[in-house]
Image (tube, rainbow, N blue to C red; front, side):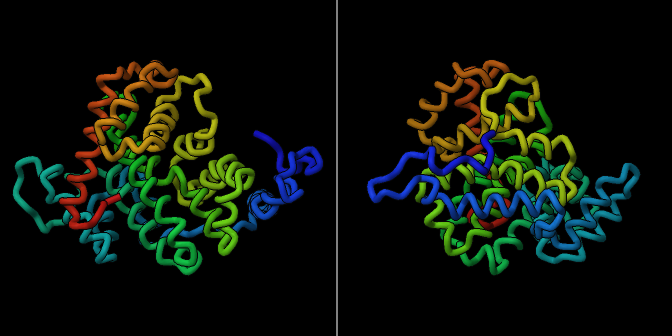
Length: 311
């Protein structure tokens, strides 16, 4: 990873005579400031709603009672409604009767999925904060990408059996939270940053570090925090299945695999020749199945919750 203090004089100049570093100066200054404040503990990270923090802390306890979790969920009507709809969906009902009992709902979903659902609820709340609404049009593709990567990561884990699907759902959901945060902090300058090659490169390079810090402040497990921080390392050889699955999900999302278009599936199957799928024993045929499964999972989530997209 490069340093943030490279000599501007060494950078190529554009046609107007300004250096690429000058064009990306706003991003350089912003990210340097974020890094400095992060190192000193002064960075104002987005906080989870109190109820979500309490749910996560309760889930971290080994001997937590389901009734304690349901009491917290029921204290937030919007979250309770989502849990209720999801637990009564065909995906999780599994032939059982519909229920209004929140204990039954939590048992059907499992604590890991409840963790993911509560985190998704928190991110939906975060979207309404003034600093995020100010760059809504730029962040909308990021929220959509979060949804797509989470669905692909879930299906990759489910089909490969290399990691817990619900854990990968969470990782996919928050994989770009650092990027979202940087753009929100950039405010009016965000659009120019994304249009500038050097600035966009800086954001791409440093968002995993910022995102992992946010995840840590949200009490995400240490292993997940590490995977988020390492997501920018590409195909570097590792036997860390969660990291490999997340990077593959991101790569597939980059070509639009979450939409299950036939041409996209054909393109995605070429990924089978790359190091990560081979490391995971994922073949071209299984990649096609995974993409189809991810799309169907997203569609079922949409039908279950009555929203445009669940994630």
